[in-house]
Amino acid sequence: MDMAAGREPLTKDRRKEVFLALVEAQDRALGTELARRLVASRFNVSEAQVRQIEDEGLEHDWPPL
Image (cartoon, rainbow, N blue to C red):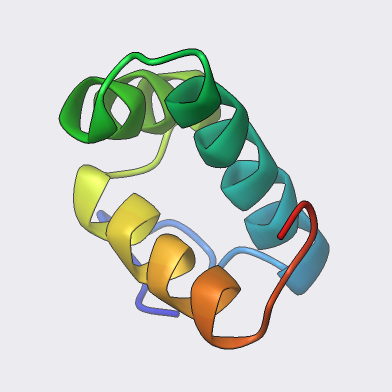
């Protein structure tokens, strides 16, 4: 995971939390872009990081998949 703005890389557990929050937001029919923005804000990460986490979660079938 890339460091952003001098922040430490997120742990795998934290990335899984972000992924779960993203999936839950999308399940509430917020739309993909809005869900990414909200999750990025909530976890104080960039939208690019959220997209990377999303890809990682899908690739590894993280819960709740």
